[in-house]
Amino acid sequence: MTRRRIASFFAGLLTLLVVGCATSHPIDPKDQSLSLVYGYIDMKDAPSSLGWVHITLYDGKNTGYFTEVDHGLFFHLGVKPGPYQVDRFGRYATFLSNVDYSYDFGTRGRNETAIRIEKPGVYFMGAYKYVDVPTGWFEQDKFRMEQTTTPTERELLNRVLAMLQNDHAQYTLQIDTVKQRLAQLR
Amino acid sequence: MAWRIAVKPVALFAAAFLFLTGCGPTPQKPVTGVSEIGPDSVVVVGRLELDPPLRPNEQQIRPGTIDPFGVGDTMRDHGFLWFSRSAETPPEKGEIVLNPRLGELYFLPVPKSAPYMVGGYIPIQFNMRLTGPRSVTVDDARIEISGGLRYDIRPGDKAIYVGTLRLHRDEFNEVIKAYVVDEYEAAAVEFKKRFGPGTELRKAIPRPHT
Image (cartoon, rainbow over all chains, first blue to last red; front, side, top):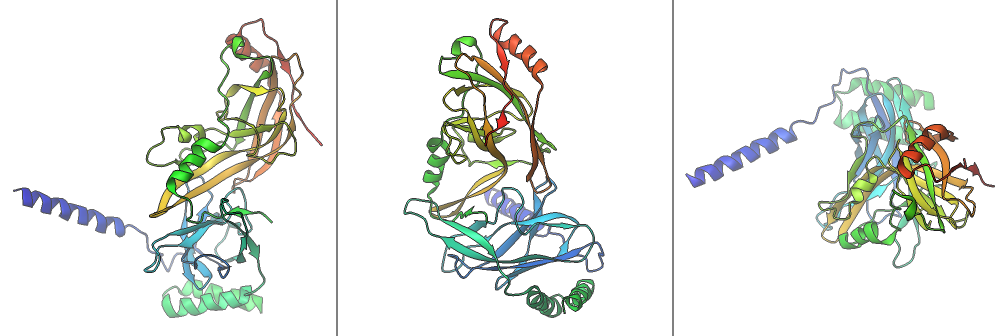
């Protein structure tokens, strides 16, 4: 009887976990209200690599998106209209390091990545470099984010296009919009 | 270019906890009677307002599993205003901190020797979480309040009215306009109810100092 109860408990727990994992909403490829947002963070000077970037929607509900990340490039192809900026970025624990890293991009008002999406399109949040700031032994570590001109918006958007075509080919709306934007950047 | 504090995993949870609870000055306690006002202090009467106001659940304040010092309560629906003897003091290095509840009239003591309001903030997010066996991260977001006000505190003052500091914010929580509104009449009525008719509440709306 007791074993059955334990088994039921774990079965219930497993069900909850599975249901919980399945509640993230997939992006509808036909949804014409969505925008593609992208940017770049150079982490050569940082104590960790870049594993995630979070862009916050400033609607008072503290929601937002975790973007896809690839060698400093970050993008999300299903962003709804609203005011957004990067608030945090970091890296989760890895096989070789059991420490999560989290960096504050600037959450004391507006920062350089702020965008306001009013109509669907492609929005560039900018390219930035993590710059370490030396501090004393007992001081909290500091850094600043410096805007950079390399890689260019065009180079980054070409990388986004390649990733969309290879990994997200069903998002034809976004692919077409990116191509149009690339044509403007020529 | 703004400086950002890296929430790098070097601080132990205990160190962060001590930092939160022990290192800064304790917020001034509200004055409830005239006898509490010493000769070197003055009761500052005013209000701190945010426009648009905080929405339900907009603040995310999670100071940890246990919060014996009530750090979370000082943040929820409250702001922080730092005062100093010198106008050059950086915000958060001020010797005195007021912790008024947003939108409510406050009655808080300030030493006469610290008339400069050097800055402040309204917490939007304070989320302390363990990120490793020996590391802690604090997700910290806030609405920053510029300093640069000098309160006109005179030697004979017992209480001064400093007005309503109204902060207009944009969608990114940047204060785009701040000004002081004179609501003396209503404040004087409230002051009399609390302290009786014998104590004068002198109007001393602060002006930006140069």
